[in-house]
Image 1 (cartoon, rainbow, N blue to C red):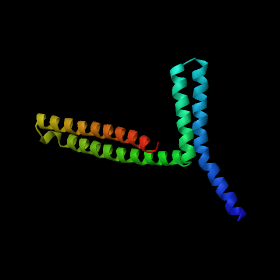
Image 2 (cartoon, one colour):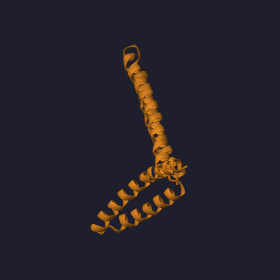
Image 3 (cartoon, one colour):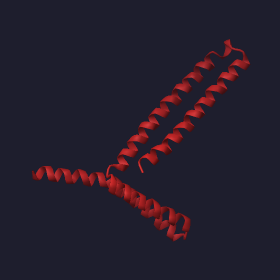
Image 4 (cartoon, rainbow, N blue to C red):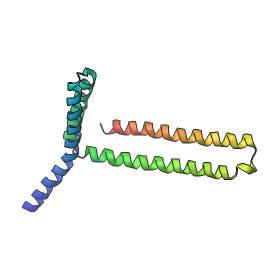
Length: 133
């Protein structure tokens, strides 16, 4: 029974470490902001510290879950971008068999799609942050 208790305490401490690291970084930024009398930055950092404390008290796994979700989202984005880039390379290989205007139109379409993917994932990342609040 004691072993289980000790293991659960260690696990809890490990999970709190992410929150503590985040808080330490914010505290350091706050010190710099105070050193340079940056009131807007001070107010923002105080709000961020309060948010992190609230989230970490509510869910000690917050930082880990958020980082895992961000990595998953980033991997999906990179996969889609790589697919578009491979299509661009295929298009370059077929360049000689196409008319100049057709090639240019398809290339612009793929570039626009690539930009759209990046913008969509930027929005999804913001939604993810809001979801974990």
